[in-house]
Image 1 (spheres, rainbow, N blue to C red):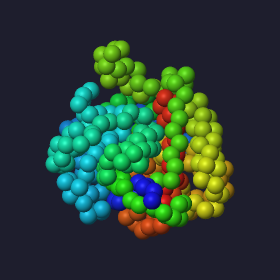
Image 2: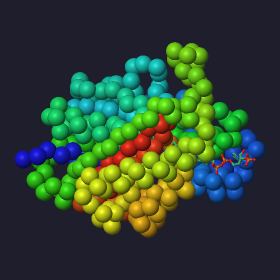
Image 3: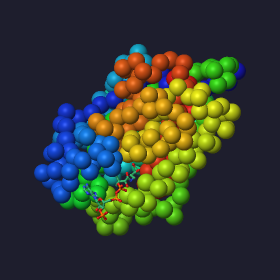
Image 4: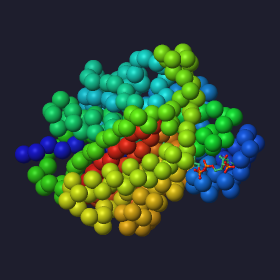
Length: 324
Ligand code: UT7
């Protein structure tokens, strides 16, 4: 008998306030044409001033529990991937646990910026395979608008807010790759590249939260090559070819990075879940938001094979192969 971690349910939340490229034209020296051509983004959701990452995480988590027909009592762990926590401490995960009435169990945040959800999924998968938990709520939630420099046109047009959640549940699987579950995860970081995408400050340096600073062109270059490497490694590790993948569910930073990865895989864009045009870059929230959208509109179906991949500050990158 072998235990895998299946995705029992998904949920997501986007703030009501939509900011279009035309709105941004009024704030910084930019154009709808530039933003669309360079990034693929047309609009993004921005949280209200009094709305926190934790508030959005809770809304997404409730929907994931509903989708899985589970109650708070059924959950024994909460992992939140975020770069924009409500407070320096405690973790957003304990707010989610406390406010949803989830009983005491493991609860902590994971900080791997845009790769955060893939890292959190991998951590949850390992807890479950080790027998230390049965059902873990894994959330990616971000209020990136709170660390954007709204005078910097090179970054403020890209980042946005939202939350997505999945419930990862232990299930017996004796069918190998044909069975449901997370079949592999691969995680990487290259700390020598940490200055390429960072905040200008932090708790133990400047004492303030800082704002996003990005060497966009360099990050773009590494994103394309790291994604190609990790996707190749994932296929080889699982002894499959790209045509066996039903859906690519990538981090949503830039449509050119997404289509570049699809091209390398020989996958048509019809098999790629794209939300970047409407969501912008919501960092750790982007993959669970995309996943939930495609599950709810019926594109992603039970039994299909999903390739999930992300890359972000650190630099960090990673992938997961999941039979939904
Ligand atoms: O999620 C975490 C990982 N992050 C990413 O994956 C982001 C990776 N990087 C990117 O997606 C792209 O590099 C960007 C979308 C950020 C930028 O696209 P680019 O094609 O690499 O543009 P660039 O940075 O080379 O800038 C081209 C020009 C520059 O002007 P000059 O130097 O050629 O005169 C910029 O100053 O575009 C200018 N520019 C803008 N123009 C209008 C930069 N931002 C803007 C703007 N509007 N918002």
